[in-house]
Image 1: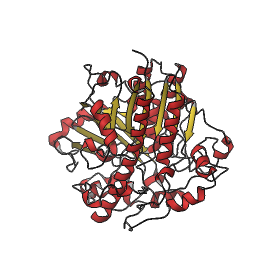
Image 2: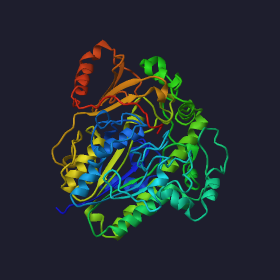
Image 3: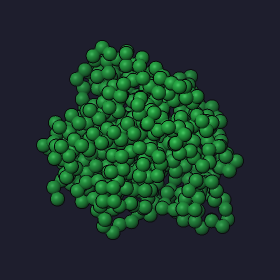
Image 4: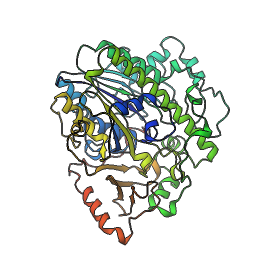
Length: 508
């Protein structure tokens, strides 16, 4: 078979069940079509439940404690990143491109790091900077991408910021973005933004992805189009923010905190004060934490979250249409996934943190293209960690570095293949939630175990019988054998971890 083009489309903080075909009442017609014409992995997890570690794992195929980015605020080593799938495919003759939010390095740093994503180093990249970066030859970055922090004014900022301010309308865009068209949501970080959709960064990424496809349609390419939404703040522009009525969204069945039923770190991580300087504490308290919401406020949050997803889905539809128009649809492997999920009210929790409930741990993964089985649902546990090996497999590329992930190609092409479990890990810094944690998680088709290595405490759920994760069976004598079985799976992790690192370069 001719080596296919590879198109990876990702979202940020997107639950695996928040797609129309996956059961929620969210309008995602284009991703739903991708699932009907391709294969859907129903038990795909992230190797880490926050942005930087999970994205570094997607690129490198390595677990976080091996590539070294074990929490946000830690930069991926350039040599490790360049040996990931982009560098490997580039060495094999592919043109490699990245458009959107990368987050392989820290943006909110305390000083210049020399990285293009660093707030103090962006201007030094020069007005014409377009890569290379982490193995990608052509790069157009939306640095940060969550408008809680507005695009960096010129002469700082990179590709998206140059567009945002370059025509002299940047401050108008900022004013419109910050204008709430109402009514007031009654929920934190949630409003109907007056920013026109054509000026939104999701539309910009869609536009630039179309340009990339047009310019590279005559050569094998690997493009990663990375959308920053539906990450908070929940600030979708009209009309997308009103596409889903708050009365018609899906509320969690269990939406109150239940710390007394959970291991100690659940309460401690939510009630302890984040460590660090005043800037770190302010970000963690005001941006990274959100209290339990009333049902009315939660409905408004979810409606806006759904709108953000639908706006990205629209951009994916534009991209898929361009593939067809350029005659690339029969020669391109398309994979849609996300870096991690979102609690979205589960157990009274919002956003993300060190409780790997399914809404946070599990992400969608949908693949379509030549040779990929249509309408297939894979129940085996896999990981976004497997993407690097998958892309190298399809591209006929030798990996430039070690990989923990395994190619998904046998599962995608309907060959006999099974997966027993997938792993996730997080060394949580005290700067995030006031306590240091060493969390190790294993997910099988029906079970999930998480252990905090420092204390030996943990939680274990039978997902097939208890999908809402209400009954922690970790200390249940009747399930001791299952706990030992799952713990043995954790022990299979390769012993190639780097020395422990803590966020030193910045916040996120």
